[in-house]
Length: 241
Ligand code: CA
Image (cartoon, rainbow, N blue to C red; front, side, top):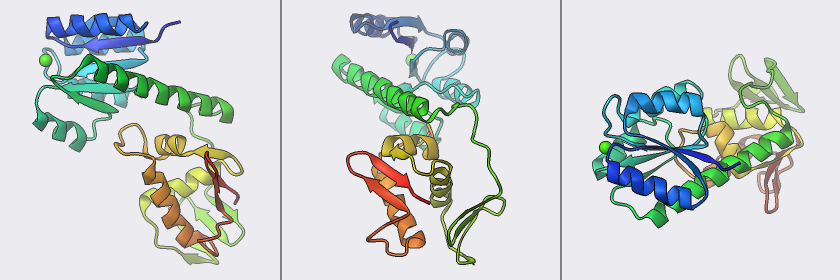
């Protein structure tokens, strides 16, 4: 079945150009030029990706994006912005978009971004299947997880080594908890980024490497020779406990 893309653009000539080029790539395309209509269509159609203009009649693209994310709509959303200054708002407000394109953009660029986002979704879906995780359900959490001299206390959001609480940043804590929920499993950087930082995070997988490095300094006996968070060559990381 072809992947479905919802194109939300009120400028009709651009809407048609987008639809034509995406259909040529084999995608199934739905179009609308109204923000409220976009919301309805997204809910019913559950598209695999949304191209979302910001300045729209009815409801603007930023509102549409925020509402969909609140409703746990998970497919990628690429914002189309008319002016450079809107980018700051898209990024700054952390509205939950995955990418943006500033008008005018080339169709080649657009198709490349669309493919990249759909590929990313596929990778994540495959990983979820491998781990047999229901994306809408978090694994059950106990208040305390113990790994040798390392303890994660989820009630207090605290990490201790030999009973001593460690100074830890929220993202490091979340990353360690995520690792501890998947002990012994290879986790790719992309998957970790997706699950720990979430859809609204704009960044790349080096973020994961940086945080792993910081975590190792705190929880490993010898950070240069890690035994807890091991690097899987060409893959990602594995938490050994
Ligand atoms: Ca517009």
